[in-house]
Image 1 (cartoon, helix red, strand yellow):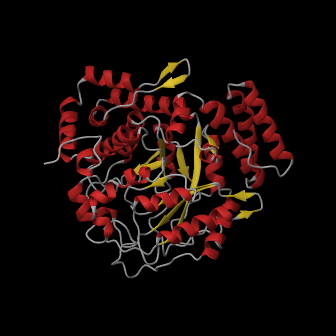
Image 2: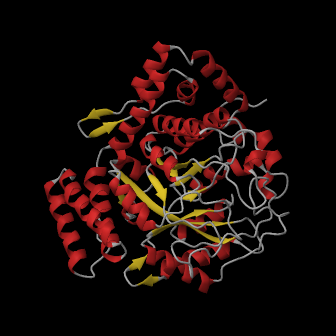
Amino acid sequence: MFEYNPKSLKAEEFINHQEILDTMAYAEEHKNDVELIHQILEKARPQKTDKGYSCAGLTHREASVLLASDLPEVNERIFEIAEEIKLAFYGNRIVIFAPLYLSNYCVNGCLYCPYHLKNKHIPRKKLTQDEVREEVIALQDMGHKRLAIEAGEDPVNNPLEYILECINTIYSVKHKNGAIRRVNVNIAATTVENYKKLKDAGIGTYILFQETYHKESYETLHPTGPKHDYCYHTEAMDRAMEGGIDDVGLGVLFGLEGYKYEFAGLIMHAEHLEAVHGVGPHTISVPRVKPADDIDPEEFNNSLSDETFEKIAACIRLAVPYTGMIISTRETEAVRSKMLKCGVSQVSGGSRTSVGGYAGYSADERPHDTEQFDVSDQRSLDEVVKWLMESGHIPSFCTACYREGRTGDRFMSLCKTGQIQNCCHPNALITLSEYLEDYASPETKEVGYKMIEKELMNVPKEKVREIAKQHINDIRTSNARDFRF
């Protein structure tokens, strides 16, 4: 019998099944306890300090009570506080990225993914290094600076050496004024030694979705292949951090198991990383099961409504206030708009989920034969950028913290002491100016410079503000690029 211990390195102890069941029971018992809920909400609120803001966060039990509550006034307050927290620590910036699929060869049997080994009618494809270059140029020509590379698990076709070679190729491509400045990596769980190699290759965040924290369901959903090993997969973030990667990204695939179970497990995983390594997850993603080749979401009986999905995101923001939250183009424009008010701080734009989905295709055409999932928001990057600005958000292409070594606990310290406004805010405006000059449509450019002029006044330190203005002027009047604080 395993006992709950957030400081343990054993998956079944830091993600303890009985503790999750007890948490769900506790939440159900107290979901209408107004006095307790008021205390939890007060704890979650950001507090103004001499140095900026502080936020206590919530335990998995506290957050689960809020998630379970069906009191309308409680739900309203959850969303209000989620937006308060996001603005306190990240401002109105939204980081932009795109996925790059390298290979759909995979030896696993995951029942929810079209790349599973038994799917014989999906074309299998792996990018050559020349094709990687073409994809990167296409992404640079869109305006992207940050990529998340994706590949199936296949030690023959996609060995780590291939991933490392692709990372090197991506960073080497300089096209016109374009450059990919941060490569995040979403590949299968691996060894400490391999994580060290990824760190040495200069990756940003290592991302690994848990899919489901319910061990029995996990093993059923992954009947064959190395991913079947629940503990090895769940303990991957500890090995990554041991290997020197201090920015890691969590996520579950909502719809595979009951959402209350998954939510508790996700927050417990964040608590575990904080307890053992002193820093929680750099990002948390909230994908849902979506249609794809050979995959019908109706086969999974744990689907959730948009309203519940949005509440989950808001409760994550209250529980883990300093994490970056990611919403992908799996979701529609309408859902993504609502999620921006739930605490989301990163979105993908102009995304393709096919292997080789960018080069040779216009903004309004896309291949479907090797897609991992349907893309619901099919707007171009320029349309996404303009939409964000018209919604009052600053699209940020900034990668400065990663390249200045402000990762892990150093980034969290910057975030917690309120220095975001003097660092990330001007960096966002500088990189937005790069996008406007090099890639934006005339309409987007006009909206963008009006926003920049207004938002420069929100940089607290006058010296920083004046330097940012000068950098933006240099970008507009010359080919000078890549300024950063």
